[in-house]
Image (tube, rainbow, N blue to C red):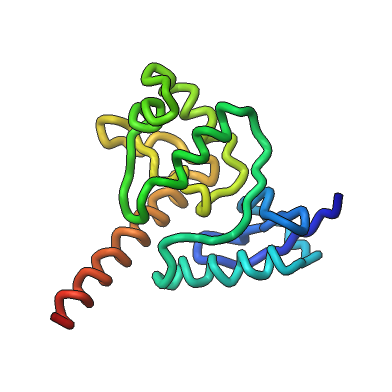
Length: 162
């Protein structure tokens, strides 16, 4: 199987997109910049740029994250959390059919190989605390703020045009 990687200097740091030629397998922050691009990595960067510019709220890129069945179920639920909104770990645990699996959901979030597109940054503690984030809490805060600000701007634009 082929392995492609392409890095992009984003507002939160260098994002490395890895793909198998058909789908994205990983997006992570890295210090190492490598470029062996393919169509999938180039399209992912295009969509990420739109996301950071506030012009994209959903991604339509094929994904192939590697993980256990439980992890993949959690990641599937995460993809359904709307842009600009958050859910608590218990909400996600309930959605995967095991309301007591909050810690397991946290661990699945931690193992999420495709940050941003599988939006684990949208999962917070029941009491509103941010919890953890593999990319660092500062990155989680930036992503949540970006989405809230873009959502607010879009709402203001709609109100102004009415």
